[in-house]
Image: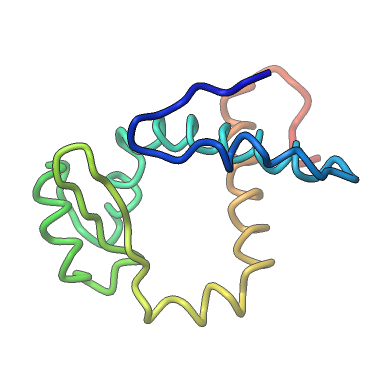
Length: 129
């Protein structure tokens, strides 16, 4: 199978990613990248803005971008949006904390997700139990 060509990218190298494959990890890695990109396109509509609300109290996306760039109230990250370009920059003050407490913070997120889902599945078996 041949992948589509591009006028601005050298896609011939992308077409060779599976040429010397001895295990399945390359297949799963590439599919994961493609799925993450699709998911990120969906998530970036509102999530990055609403996530910062505990630090920056505004529901206006443009104001959120502007105020986040000053890392107001020690916000977790700054938002940058220019036309179709969108990215975040992690507040370096949070970097060591996030790395040191990674496992606990992931558990914290999953636990709170579980509680959130439990309140929305009334009449079902309690999720965390």
